[in-house]
Length: 165
Length: 165
DNA sequence: TAGGTTTGCTTCGAACTCGAAGCAAGGGGA
DNA sequence: TCCCCTTGCTTCGAGTTCGAAGCAAACCTA
Image 1 (cartoon, chains in turn cyan, green, orange, yellow):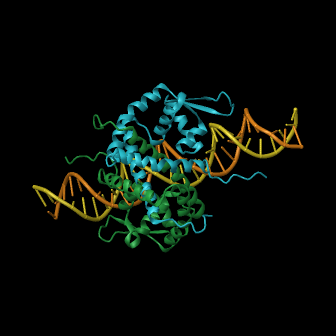
Image 2 (cartoon, rainbow over the protein chains, first blue to last red):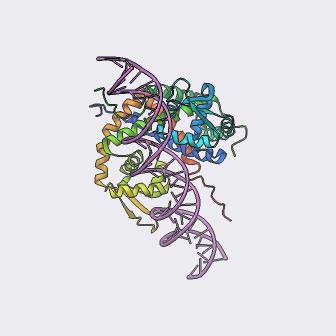
Image 3 (spheres, chains in turn yellow, orange, cyan, red):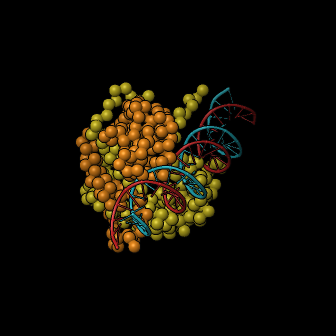
């Protein structure tokens, strides 16, 4: 477990801790805003936004779970709530009888649109205020390859897959 | 609610979404490692680490909650578990009869030390692999003022404080 | 120094999260 | 084609999280 002698530079470790702290603060601020402006939790907002961005406004359940880094069972639960609220609709996937496709409804889109301005305002005030456009670009350029790298490795659910017997 | 006409630049917004995604992936990876190497959850690790860093190895409950961006009631719950496990000790604050001081025990320090190598290894592999030392420094330099800015504003618990009557 | 307010923590109830287990459909290889 | 393994989702139970309410100490201010 853990590469031997994979010592981490303190400067790099500092970047990691800074990111953890900032993302904690950011998420907390966002949660307040989403709740206040649209009665949404962070997870539900993420689900709706991903669907809204997706071509056709829909995703396979599993793909969506991966996209927002969330457990499948948790997504089933939230999908149930969102469906009950009419923000989302589930239907069997056409190609695979096992699959379920989750799609955003017009009401769902409307809610995202309603919440987005306040959302951007909060993110702007809390997070972006101290970041010039150049800074933001730099930040994105730093984080994008990191994200891609993390996406590449163990796709999700690090449960040690039983090796084929 | 929300500054009027506070339109957010798409590039900046992209930085925000990238950060949210990376922190989600990172946290997921970390959670697996901490659980595997020390039976720790992310929150419990954060508590122990903060205490270990603190001079005297102790904090006021409230200060600790703010530091890790966590609810007070949630911290009470986790402190109870950690205390039961002997990793932490609670005692009334000397100066303020209401306050509770939470301190890390030797066992707690030992556990953090035991988990840290694996932790750094995972963070190194997942997050820092694609970040040179300069990149990491840049990232920290970008995030630090942002963090300070977020720390400055509403300290915690955005519950609209009743204005003094 | 008495009254009302604020602060620090815990308790409580409701909602949420996750992994394990369950179940049905898909996909080979013999 | 018949098994057996894998995949996709849901159900289930246990543990966790949060805000509101409760309670006690501390702080004003008259």
